Amino acid sequence: MSRPKVLLIGATGNTGGSILAAMLAADQFDIELLIRPTSVPKPAVQALLQRDNLSHRVVDLDLPEDALVPALAGIDILISTLGPATVAQEKTLVRAAKRAGVQRFVPSSWVTVAPPRGAMLLREEKEAILTELRAQEMDYTVIDVGYWYQLSLPVVPSGRLSYAIPVPSTTIHGDGTAPTILTDLRDIGRFVVRIVADPRTRNRSVYTCSAVLSENEIFGIVEAVSGESVGRLHESEEETLHHADQALAELAADPTDFWKRAQVYLAQYRCSKYVRRENTPQKAAELGYLDARVLYPDLETVGFGEFVGEVLAGRGRNPYPRSGL
Image 1: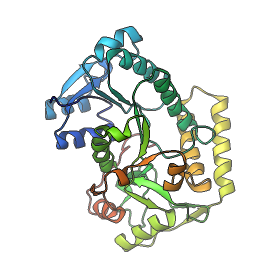
Image 2 (image 1 turned 30 degrees about the horizontal axis):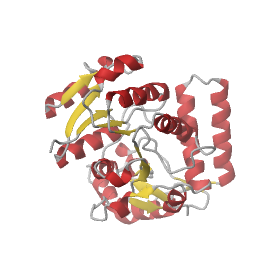
Image 3 (image 1 turned 180 degrees about the vertical axis):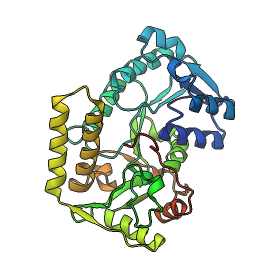
């Protein structure tokens, strides 16, 4: 029996890199990378291709649907980790994939658990892709990952964690007790390997999870592992909601400014997680998600304390070392 052929989009990104590493380790798929023509000369792309001797397809995602169909020929599973602001491209990709005979499409979701409408602009943009998949009667699997460990660290007085933190913060939102689904970046790929090979996840949404922790618990673990006291700033729920409203107003004044859009994403993440408490297993169950921990109880995930210890030992990595969030 031939192995499924996977086409991965975005292999040099954080999520795509995790998926690629796990798939190579699992050695149960034939993997090809989709690379944009403008990305081919980039050092990160060249290093990746030379390191792993990977097959790849050079495809301009701005091409019309008819031109994309032959570019997707022979693919069984297409996994997209395209970034925000690519809704139009991904809709065209869905239609082309359907015509090319792709068997399963994993759209670029990879966000926190939240209702499809009225909670987060980013969630609504992701939902537009899912709507297109259903309209095309294309088999899919949506994979959401909660919030990364790598974006959840507070700073400590010594600065030992700071090299791995994109945006330093010691803010506690509300009373700090809101539980939230977290996934270590490395665990994302490990879960994906299982999820895309599993018939139970076809035409379903699945969430991954390394731990469920509140901000108070996160800060407590960091203090216990580091031996340092973490200072705390407190932001009320009203302030968190106000910041989101302010970010939306600024975006409305200049809708083409992607940085202002990113500020909306971040502010709405905080409202969703800490005010409405949506990024939880309970809410995921209400929304019809499958729990990857239940599907794959033998998969060992990285503990948050273990992760903190690695960062303190200098083995962490800043997921956004140049541009921040």
